[in-house]
Length: 402
Ligand SMILES: [Zn+2]
Image (tube, rainbow, N blue to C red; front, side, top):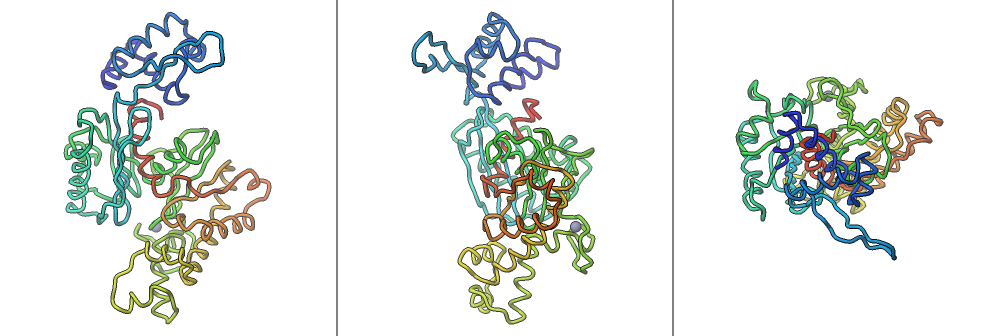
């Protein structure tokens, strides 16, 4: 249905453009009366009435009836019809996938979290991913044609405009978004995972009116989503935010990008994992020791969980990451002068163990005048930030909101 509107816009229809602006208005500002909508959009009441009536007939807008007021006349309020279209969001993590579905209004109506998965740059991994997404869609309570678009988060370098991915699943010259479309049978856009998490937090998380925001994604890797003046910042080709690959150390640790000494090699979940195994081999103790001695394979999440059970070794490593990260976030604050720095990603699920050393290092290493403008907070959406962002990006891209 939205495609029809977009097609009309492409044909140069002024009414279609006004109608999509009304939909955007409702999405950004919520429900409203026709009189107020007219004022906000600088249109006469008869024009607004005509356009909204058409949008109701087309199924995009609903009349919610009389407004609840304490007397006087009570005009009807109107807003988007939640059922007029749906958007799928897919967040691929290191060892699992989260998938969600939002309605046209932006409410998450169905979701599936922590579906086991092996994120590797192989055809087999890609095929399994498509099977999982198709299976999710097949089991939804709404029919597939109601899904207008899907947003998929990809780690590393992604050009969301051309649909190319350069860090993972680059098997052909064809844009990855197109290959996804062929396998999934629906419209697909891709974006960088940290950018998508930032957008999730911006649209329905922690952000309450702030316009200049940095979202630091501390997961297996380290990423950054940048919002400037209320808009996602992409850079020329969509590669902005490669915070994890900042050359920060003289270490000999080979980063997965192919270089040595990247910030990510000492400030990420993969660092915590690597150091934890080394420390245990050196004879340090931990509550996970027994399992490891039995030959059991432990994962990053086991260590983060151990920290929540007050395991000193795990806590110390998270603090070390917090310190290192804080020092470099101080640099970001000096550069960007943001209102809000959000710390998210799986490592941030450990809360104060990561946040407090970050705050303390930021205080120590940033310019006080600059950093006193910035509050540093934990992500509100937690492990849902990616999937919420992916859904929201799918909708916003389709409606031309970003
Ligand atoms: Zn690197």
